[in-house]
Image (tube, rainbow, N blue to C red; front, side):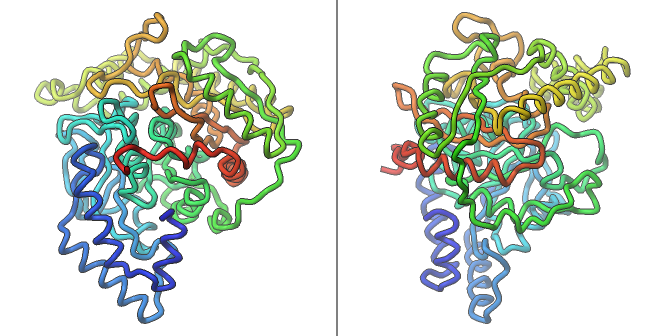
Amino acid sequence: MDALDLSRAIHSRQISCREVMVAYLDHISRLNPRVNAIVSLQDPDSLLKQAGERDAQLARGNSLGWMHGFPHAVKDLAATKGIRTTCGSPLLDTVPEHDEIFVERLKKNGVILIGKTNTPEFGLGSQTYNTIFGATRNAYDQSKCAGGSSGGAAVSLALRMLPVADGSDMMGSLRNPAAFNNVFGFRTSFGRVPAGPSFEVFAHQLSVNGPMARSAADAAMLLSVMAGPDARDPLSIEQDPSLFSRPLDCDFKGTRLAWLGDLGGYLPTQNGVKERCLESFKAFEAIGCTVQQALPDFSPARLWHTWLVFRHWLVGAGLAAFYSDPATRPRLKPEAQWEIEGSLNLTAADVCDAFLARTAWYQSICRLFDTFDFLLLPSAQVFPFDVDTYWPREINGVKMDTYHRWMEVVIPATLSGCPAISVPVGFSKSGLPMGMQIIGKNHADFSVLQIAHAYEQAAPWVRDHLPPLLG
């Protein structure tokens, strides 16, 4: 069942929370060993006891929310009280004494935490592997990678091991794995889902938390739980999150979409990626949209340099203590060490220039939105690649000079701060999924979900192609 159908079945007492938990745990036991998506799975007896408590609450007429009785696994970057949290690194392997803000909200809404979803070390890189749990494999082809850093979440969704999933996104970490596994991944507007509690609440304005789901409607309902202001996050958006529980139906006749493609030939892209996106335009046209090719009036090379400065600055500051200690430095993967080393030569002027460039980029995006209602970009520049390959070294003969250069296509949305959802656009000739970003205006999260929902109704490839493991 989709998450909304599951919720209705639980609340109408067609099925019990215990039956749901038994079914999910059985399904996970059969499929998860093939893909390694869910980690730190909790004791089944304890989970079944919690499910029985949820049934008793419903018998008394007490529902905690639409997710009452849902099995749920939180991405292993987010703190979960009493449940092992590793961030994919032995250096951060611990059992927290508190929950992340959005995890608090999930629990209050009735979910039962069954474990965590796998993520790369510190969430760095769009390939989900680490030295603690190993690699997560693609839902459609277990010889391929799952994407990342919310790779465990995306695979769990695609294989129906979770009703919905949470994830986070700095450089496409909700969008890339969604594309690689034929599901929806929504990078929300900055502040839509409050971050923390944290020791720093102002500087980290690149990463956001958001929902992943098998439908836009499920994603919206999950966001209705995750979103909303919190005093612990002074930059959280002051808007009633119940907005996202409203019907998504909307008339998009006359809506104007800008196709940014490969940014005028700037982005090397594997053959077939753009073609899948172009074919998806038929679904947009079917709901009344027009699609026109366009380019922002901003240098993509300058945008990439801006990204490197911010990435070095924020990642370097967060991991500097591990790098400085000779005992822990060797335990950092090379890509993490590279980010830290890149931060060592940054000056305050460099960071200030990056902020100015980011502002200029946002203004450029706003000018595009003067003409267009939404912007379209591929969600990745390559199809899922070999699970034992850490990152693609070249695309169409063009060498990738960093471990994340092959995901450059996602930074336009990240640096703008605008909401962006990855929607499925079909499959390669070898059956590998791909997705496309729909980017909306700042804080227009609901509108982005609405057009994703309308697109979904007109795009049969979203639901007609199940992973082979599901038979």
